[in-house]
Length: 477
Ligand code: 4AD
Ligand code: MG
Image 1 (cartoon, rainbow, N blue to C red):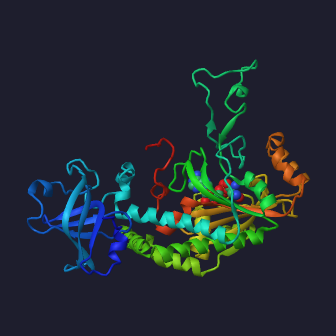
Image 2 (cartoon, rainbow, N blue to C red):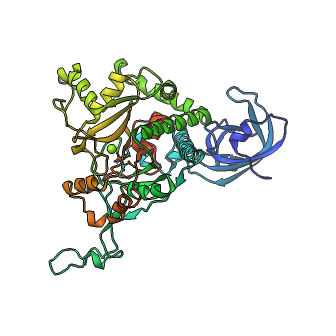
Image 3 (cartoon, rainbow, N blue to C red):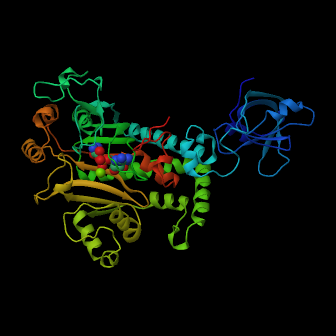
């Protein structure tokens, strides 16, 4: 008999039909009731073992974590908390789990503990919910772009460029590290390396994405990106997934519209398709917040936050306006910011971004027209000569969710800026070619996928929304 997933079983009308289920034991009560979970839903199926069906030796093997197959009749549940239950005819232990050694006990574990046991944490309610939501969001991203006629472009993972020019790349080499070839000048001789040049893992697919957009009109990437920034925060990963659309014949306004529509769409998708998981995560967060002093608790619960976010337009504000708001804020005057905001031109710290979003506007904010000096070389220069057509989307509790811009399509202006910022033009001739042959207005952005999953799940540490996080001094699994 073929196995039915528990999510489907829980939706069946009980008519004493015979079915087979397979899953992992969450708990086993009174030598009689198995709470079985197979990850298709957070809800367990109760499998009832009638007295005398199994001998003692077999009953002892039904332990938390064991893999079990059960066949029996689906009936209306007699107990509370579930509508159907399975009265077992046969129970097979597929994989034992030593209760003395199995780390995931049927009790509340700390997130720290579960992070150390990330290979088993999928078996908890919290992580089951998180990774089902993560999946839905990924699917929704592809659906959104597909429905709009965007082409999914696979940009390379190994590259010779540092798109952001921030120097935070991981080198890729197959040199024998104990015997690295040197040239006459005593420098590393990358000509002898695998690719014949210095290469690294990509920090962004944007530059290659722009090449695609200059022929296909609308493209997007969705892949892993790597940054060796040594910031050990709850919002940074060394390996994270980024979604990067790029659109020809599009300016910053079109770019903002698309980003806002995408965020509304994917959050709505999760609200619609992951109701059970989001309800569970909402309860989880409420419980967690009970530990905090009243003043630190959020005004809205997770579900309300998500609903608020999809039903309100994001605030659009220039960098210059934002600096004025921050400068004049009581927070700044009372020196509550760690870094005080005194002058135009400073880069915004995450405390400033969060103030704008959480205290001032109380909703997601799109900040545009940043100072040229603090942004990447490829952003389109404004007429004022000091700002660029950049946009960052800032979210409550998260900070920067999206970074993007209209691109500088004018060859002379782009080349001059590259010179000023020491971006090696001779290595980016292919990029400059799009400005030589059929250049046009274009724009795009990068959405940090884990930051999105953080927001939608209400988790606070980015290490908890990617299966196996890579952070400084940590590359387990
Ligand atoms: O702002 P960033 O650096 O922008 C770019 O890479 C552009 N090339 C994107 C583009 O225009 N196509 O990164 C984009 C987003 C950030 O807003 C943030 O959400 C996320 O990527 N991000 C990170 N997420 C997790 N860990 C990190 N270390 C991240 N760095 C950036
Ligand atoms: Mg950024």
